[in-house]
Image 1 (spheres, rainbow, N blue to C red):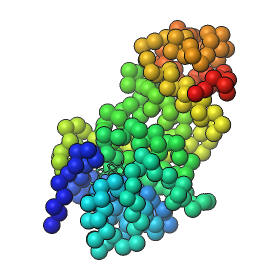
Image 2 (image 1 turned 90 degrees about the horizontal axis):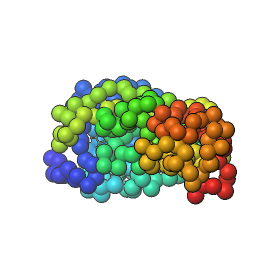
Image 3 (image 1 turned 180 degrees about the vertical axis):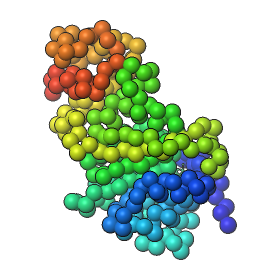
Image 4 (image 1 turned 120 degrees about the vertical axis):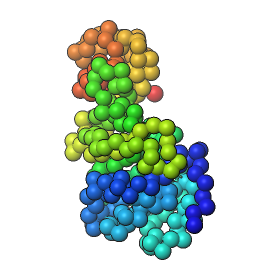
Length: 263
Ligand code: SAM
């Protein structure tokens, strides 16, 4: 008998729809040789079917009661449990190069954006990442320039991953049911990221400035980083707004940034 009451502070909405769980596992196409890491196993809705199909599985759970409950399950076997905050987790600590990791998570919605940025900062460790998120966040992740939901997250992802929205999940698939629809997405790191490792910091700083006041023209939004001539030298009109620029244009702007101008 499960006695655990879902905790809002940990974004706990547990999957109970067997059809959706099957669809998630089918999308992963797990192989016996895979090394998976799952963020937020909860009661094990995804963990249990996945564990029976892969050689190595690590899970990160912040809720100690859930972690204790999981470890008591007979099926839990040799899954490695990390009682930790996924936002601070160093994925390097479980990677065994040259082996790559695969990631899956029905992510806690209250921290989904910072968690995505954290995962993204170690994207080179992963073959792919499958994540369940609010539908609205997945729409932002896959938005195109000129759209008002196109933003820092969209561009930061596009420079490093191919992003696919796989399917929508209605609130009734969860307990408790959230108020919003969810979506399951696949992120596949690009073999050649558009941004070089040495320019990552500059790129991320540029995006933070460009989208911090999205209604501002680029000339104003970027004034602490670039002068008008540098923006023009990147082939970009300084009167345009950040939301109209493609990822390639942000990369051109990054090339104009001096090392000394980043915080
Ligand atoms: N995977 C389960 C499922 O699909 O039913 C649970 C998903 S629930 C949306 C999110 C899970 O992430 C919960 O188990 C929650 O305790 C855990 N969690 C929340 N914040 C976390 C964090 N910062 N680090 C690790 N786990 C976290």
